[in-house]
Image (cartoon, rainbow, N blue to C red):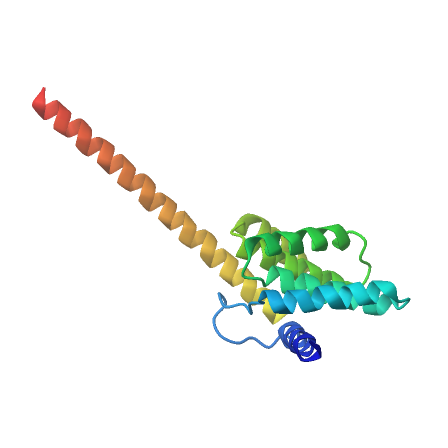
Length: 171
């Protein structure tokens, strides 16, 4: 249990340090054991008086949820972050929450909303390489989805034109 929490903490620390690994489309993934460990840690933190530990536990759980393999967990992480981002006054914590929201929306396929959050994140910290990399990945996906959409539309028009031409030849 402590080893699992330690791995999450190390992953979060490494992830937010600005060191990028792999392609921009690769994000660390969390399994249910890690999420469960973060939930237990948060439950323990809520019993205590240390507000700092509570906030750290919430951030770790949010991070784990938006990096989950389960879509419902990602949505839960997004909801937790959206609920807390409005009350944040620390620029560092705000940038991390905005970044995690961008990750969550990216992973759930809402690239437009993901782009909005990453732009807000970059307003807070313009030189953050992690956020710049995510912005590039988001833009690439938006372009890719646009090209696929155009391809589908052109194919549909071609099929309709082919059917119409065949009907005209028969008639």
